[in-house]
Amino acid sequence: MIRIIVAACLLLALHGCTVIQSAQYAVARYCMLPEPARSANREAVALAMAPHRISIVCAGGGQ
Image (cartoon, rainbow, N blue to C red):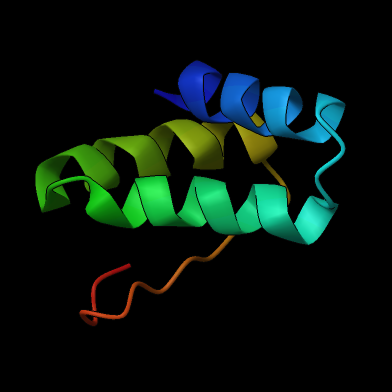
């Protein structure tokens, strides 16, 4: 899933979109995932980004 989000961000960046637009797209896709998938995605990103962190809070109150 991480690879899909990264690939989508790269594609958008190559088409002249700003970093903010690419991030908005990635966050929107992330927030559309069901909670179990978001949880698995969080763990994968945490392992890949350690010791750094990324936090996304979706409008529905989930992370």
